[in-house]
Image (tube, rainbow, N blue to C red; front, side, top):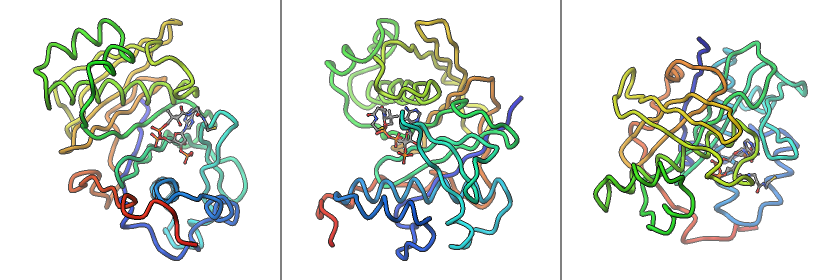
Length: 255
Ligand SMILES: CC(C)(COP(=O)(O)OP(=O)(O)OC[C@H]1O[C@@H](n2cnc3c(N)ncnc32)[C@H](O)[C@@H]1OP(=O)(O)O)[C@@H](O)C(=O)NCCC(=O)NCCS
């Protein structure tokens, strides 16, 4: 079975000096006006470069990290480039509340769109949100939970798994979130990961995993059946992560 590897980094770990970015990334980042989007872009890139460096056993210096890029197809879907050439591994990235995660697929595979990762926090979701974005079966299961934290946790888990699956499908939220339906187990296995399954209205099926780390909910989905994602060596995952919203006091980037 294919082995996926992941890690997490917080925005506070992102180096201030941008020499770890490629020229193309520096140019893109320079054009981002809002601090939230800028910080999110950098944190996603930092997590991705650190993950790819670890998977390919590359020392993560500024110089080597600048040669690792996650570029985007016109759909927004990511693909990996190393030293200017498409690289043999699939990646997916996500960020939420000051933290970014990256999932790297099996090295040697040039296929992209085989996997998706999504990070959310357990936040309040309205009854309207549940009715509008979830399928009837998901609504029933989410509403079986008491109103409050329990129901919010279930609603955010379903939402996150949908996003992970829609990333595998390379469509993101362009597609109706009710075109994919999530089923999930609450039996935690290896490293706290629980199973999930996603079925799409066109008959496609995805397998994946989810986990809860305090306020964070993390989901992964893949085309193939996958083992619970393995945390890359030396990384703490989301174990001590706390949501941060540092951009709130300063929405625009200082120029
Ligand atoms: C995919 C999507 C649901 C993720 O939204 P989000 O929850 O705000 O953001 P996340 O942090 O979880 O994920 C962002 C990453 O998703 C990935 N992504 C974006 N579009 C994607 C797609 N169509 N398929 C797979 N992955 C996608 C990217 O790697 C992106 O990070 P990057 O831009 O730095 O490379 C959303 O971006 C989307 O629906 N995109 C497609 C529609 C769209 O509006 N596109 C405009 C930009 S081209």
